[in-house]
Image: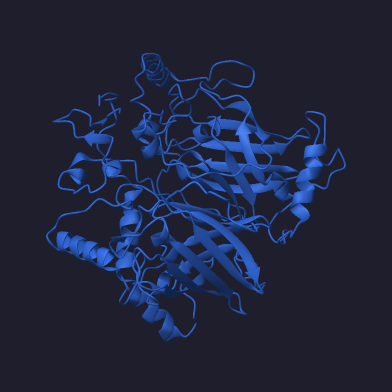
Length: 242
Length: 301
């Protein structure tokens, strides 16, 4: 279904929807199957990854299918990470880790769906990701850490395709590389147990031998709000950057 | 204080992301031109093409202004020439002696080519400056719990404003403050307190007593938000300061991103004056010599 034009301000209805979702049980069952009234705004809320992902693996548990040069870079990054050297990771100096990285770490994010766009608001250093839902086919003007994205609803799933992800970022904390040619497709589905599932497909012929997928899950954080986080102030206090 | 971390950052590059940002700054510097153009064509709307002759993006499908007076969702831009430039309040500001002296000092330093480090320059949230005079288009997302004001293209800023009945009893001081909203008829009233007293307006640092009250009223055709902002801060202003602005509807805009922390080049900080210790950079990018890669070193406290 299309979200555009289908969402008046809910003036109280959203909270009821969220409450209904929270009351549901049964992992893997959709909101609609449980009889709750699904709407695009059912994704609204603050979410936190269930288990932080330091090193991405494919959904079958295998390692990402890296090409030889990418594998060499990855191994060097892993070795550096284990030695406490995160110089490959721009988040070390508070630059944007981009996506999917900001959705693999243990920092909350909030989703707000509007008819024209969906906003992802990351607590980590106050980043926002705005994804158009209008069907606009944006040209990749230049690589960015959040890329150039377009979203749509397919049934009860929110599907986001992102291109133009800058290669200066890494995909996970252990330094999984990628190129500017990466195409990342995320499929978000609400499960009936207060869990949001994100199935991520990676296609990057300059880095991987073929497409591969992984799945991460987030738990709804009832009542939580996104706080002001300033990475530069945190590292001045001796806290980790990310 | 000990040093550490890094080397191996890729060779210095002209960040592609900086290019439109530079364009945005240049655009902002001449926004009055856009104002005149908008006034001349009588449409009341500002599109990219009215700013400095820039051929802006075409309208996006679905971006029609809503005539619901309480629906602010969409993309807006500060109408140029109405109340001053982005980050700047036009006209005389009723500064206290302390604030006036500080603003004069910073003006002298700027004229002499010396930069005084501020939250804006040192990648901290810009607080009241961005609240009053956003420097790039404002994306507004809204539901019945909150509005989120997002500035993405230049000087990144995300402001969550909640429809709460009252402020938290002791809000944690922050750069952006603690903002709550309510409806007064069809006028949105946003009340912000809880600033950490480090931000600046017109080159004077305001105090943690700053209170910003904004009244947003939407035009009947849905294309304009009239904003009346009242700033109260006895340590900074001798009387409440009222600023009137308008934001006008943009028919969609491709979101870009601004990563202030991306390239903390050492030459940017070389001749800078740091009046506040917290603003000194912890991470500095050093240029490699010859074919050597540039690298970032982060100090640890």
